[in-house]
Image 1 (cartoon, rainbow over the protein chains, first blue to last red):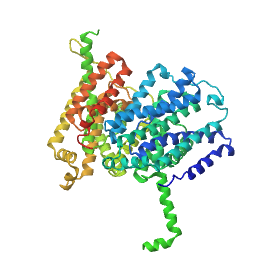
Image 2: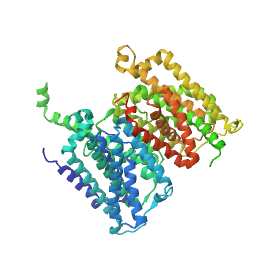
Image 3: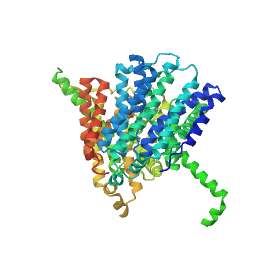
Length: 329
Length: 290
């Protein structure tokens, strides 16, 4: 098996890393940070949904757990923010593994898997909106403490670079998965689970591993959200918005591709900002557009932006070498 | 301990609420039984129907019960159109795509309502909203007794349509054996759309029955639909009598758990039951489709 090509990933990350050096505009950095946050959450969805074919409608369960664990450990137990961050990711992964163990062992797939993940996210949302430990209806405010030791920074650039590192890591991980035996099993399960089982793939274990990795990535996005905005409540943490954005990014960008979630998150966020510019900040309008984009992409560009790009590249290649065209007659 | 009178009242109230759950679930189970998809837009369509009924009263002075006569065919047409011209073509027969398209529709409808009407909660003030029937030991609200009766009539009508009419027979044929039905000259795309239309029409009736006593906001349908999912799973995906019995059962469970645990936890009870049923009886659920 060829070694996984990571050079393009490093190139993209290096280019994005240069942005704070070129502009000190908070608007630009804020925009990119939110887009990268969605890209990270979406990469999580992509591992399970894109490569594994298990469509979750409740990735909020992982995002919210990452966020709440990070916030609660800091504010209630005085745990260091960096440690809290790592434990937040672990907590999200654990929830992922638990949900995976319950659903995959019961043989739930397709619509049922989507439905159960949605229900888990909703149960967690309702619990978080009444439990005292999550601040019930009020939410949790993380105390302002602008020191790097506390995972808080004076300017936005360090936040941005840390998030970019996380996104870079997630891209490398997915690239490695793509080129690994595990990745091949995962895709086999997506394409035909029964056939994969017949060939000796332990489909349940493969899916379980996928949902755990997937949940960890999305939980990292949630944990980062808390450090960046210093606030979390049940609607943000476990609300449907993040479940939708997490699946929209990879689907728009190119489902089951390494760069799909990043491309999609940027595209969807740009679209969101343009809407805001055109109509003002009206509640609901951005989601109306995102929902329409979802339907349109499924209908007309099922392989997303990545698919359109590769089609375009092929067309350009054909145009450059008409000999091939003639040879094909 | 609670007195038996309160218990009886809670059970009766649960049955009345459960009837509306059953109606919402009926639409869902019908669509599932024929198209083999879970319609994630069901809740948003119910919300849309409730808004339609609300404004039929606010703007045209139409009583919700009268509005049902207009809205039911209208929502049948809406459902037919959505399946025939949006979901069907966009999904190209792929189950995963259908999931995403109905989710997309749900997001669009719910947020379009949010955009236009904001998240304000609205209620109609009808003079009969607080009328009650005195049963000697308990008082039951008239609008909910009416709802109970109408649901039974609608369920009977649906059953008659499915068993007696040619379209109904075609629907059952497609549900059982799609390819065979297609080969014997049934236009599957049309039958799919009719089924989706019937399911959506159930929502219009449910909306008109709910409105005299219930509030409207852009998220109101979600609560009903998760209950409806539970009902459908409990009663068996695709089964009309199952949806009816399941709806009544869940209504009582919710009413009792609300009594013992309080409102918000009562809702969790339903979710947990839903997850449990899905996890423990998956074989029963996949009986028809792998």
